[in-house]
Image 1 (tube, rainbow, N blue to C red):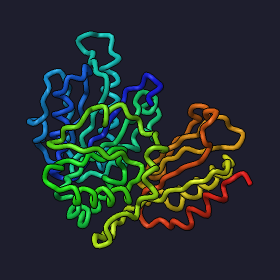
Image 2 (cartoon, helix red, strand yellow; image 1 turned 90 degrees about the horizontal axis):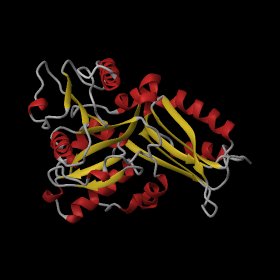
Image 3 (cartoon, helix red, strand yellow; image 1 turned 45 degrees about the vertical axis):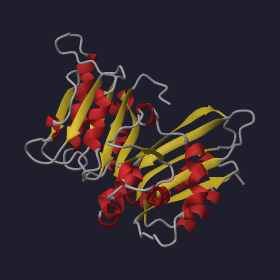
Image 4 (tube, rainbow, N blue to C red; image 1 turned 90 degrees about the vertical axis):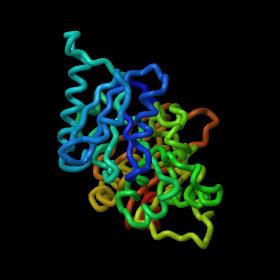
Length: 331
């Protein structure tokens, strides 16, 4: 949960035509009582999405000179700085009031560098908090998009929430097959459902991304997918668990090695760790080469103390991860 006064930021991503702008309009149109600053990213010199974004009270910031996730990431930081200055302005004419930010990326964007922005810039990290990355999935076209597009797989990998949209166009069996495929790729993401991108807003806003105990309950069911539907996805998830207390120094040394060796291949990783001689849970999350961790709430008296970690990436050796994770135990 957001335990600070930081401004929460939600990133909307998803492949072309999945329904991101429809979801954004739905968010802005609902009676949620919040003022939202919106950053819309689109390719080309002239933006199209601004004609579709509704809501007179919202400020629309467009960056039309490229993709938010690559050559204009500096512009994203600049816009976030500008928003902070306007929100803090003493002059009422310059002041801009908003409660949260929603960033809509282009359909071809890799959300990773957007998420990295909230790790790499200290001033940004002190003022804003990444709430969640919501990936909108076109349930009808998802398999073909994932089969041919590496970007579509990356968008699944980075998600905290997978919104399965257009569920009215598929039957229950088709939806189950899609769910199982997505869970193999990202077991830590919550799966929600929608038609015309409509979903209860409490399912995608103010969720703040740590609820691993519940999220990883689905991990043992990875292989329940129907055998005659096999997809060779580049992106896969590794789930690590141990009941033995971990040695923090060993964890730090291992993570240093992992990040140097495999950082570019690790799209998203997060965990809750039971560290020896620490009466609080240690939680962390990372994106590629950048990660942050902190001591969370105290372990409850009757709570099972265990360490759980999920690593989502490409070309990762699951056996090696399991072995190294076990070597981090205090024994």
